[in-house]
Image (tube, rainbow, N blue to C red; front, side, top):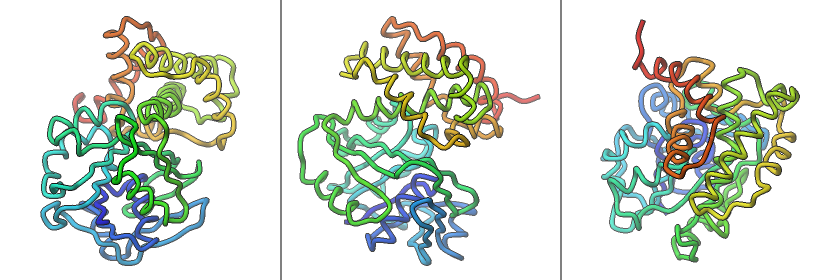
Length: 312
């Protein structure tokens, strides 16, 4: 199986690196300093599961150089999907499968504007990691995993083939959940409120979960996601927010979500991809999400400035 990894940030760098380490035919699409670093010194991963390097990764500057792949793993930020999707056409052949791993809910919808729906399967990743410098990834939390599946939840040859290939890699788990849409909403429930509330209070999870007021705010944001998902027909358990809060109690107290880090450090974030859809979908469904509405409104100016859409 020829695998194209699009984006060599925290997610693409870690999982692509693990697959390359296992001997899979992995080709990375990178650019700028990341491409230069991969070609000059390889890909480096510092991980709580064990550090490793890929000394000579197959790294390319353009999709045309790479050619068609059996599997395209889309690992760019969710806010980059619309702009990059058309350029990926040279990677997509008659039998190519596209596996998006973005945070948020909208990536499959965006991809269907450019590629046939049957080429796109559902996917998500679970990992706390960061790109600390070009082609250098630090994994600092969670046992890394990828969940994937057909949208109708049927068993398929291509899902089984991906599970077999990914299953050969150390330092990661690959799962075919019973319902991929439920799994995606469960991840949104876990990650998006953590980034939204963490960025608003500008404190790591250890502080957020300790102070009653900020803990209540986080829990309320989680409940809003559950209520919205149920209103949109996703069969989420009503007590899912309570269970997610318990999981957050197990995290490293210094942990932060990527959206939190980006907003606090003045970098373009995934606010528009993660939180804006929650507010929009709630309006469409007639569901009240006051925590999301208020925090999204408060954080949006900083995000617009980071994207260069507000200038002094």
